[in-house]
Image (tube, rainbow, N blue to C red):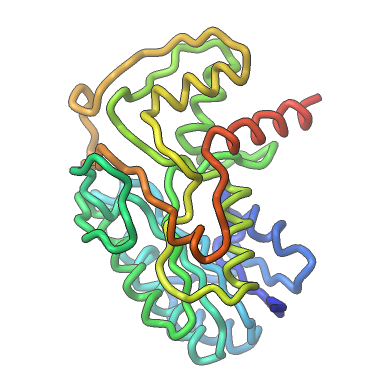
Length: 289
């Protein structure tokens, strides 16, 4: 299936950058924050009607989890109501919509990876805004809502906000003390694999709907950091901590791992996070000479 013209909102972000590159052979309309105010429903509708894309990929988000507690209106505007505008405009022009969700929609009070059918229980403003965005996206007739978490693997030279794993690897490579949680369980998501899964879903006959789009497996941040140190051949200097020892403005879920078997059943088996981490670090070494 051909993707036709693709409109990418949030194209300047870490995920948007990779999405634009992944669909480079198509006609991509890459829109950053200065190109389209997605919180303006009139502007969104006019731009989509002007571009007439067959696919809209929304990579824009307000990702400041703690900041959302002090700016709930902004979080809701970007993460929820802007998605409603994109979904409605996508329906009007007959486009498929891809929107990215988050593991934070769950409360973290479990001991096994979450399924798409599990009941959400957001614990903070950011999570609530993202859950609303999922619901609005799902109103589009042809929509893929892809939950990701702990994104890693920024392009070389990336100067924006970096994910936890990118920060951990930076600390290991620089020989600094690195603080890691021993009790927070995650399923890291490699940007390249998320983009590849996105491409597969929109170019295949996969059913529309909600998917957990993370690398396979799970681990505590300590376990993930240990694997990074092993692959780098470095002796780590970790400051081990637990969730209860750290005071954060917004409550975080403790157990965040997501089960991606639905994505595999649709035809795309995500590699393990260990495999993804190894590929990224190998790429980094090659890029840096």
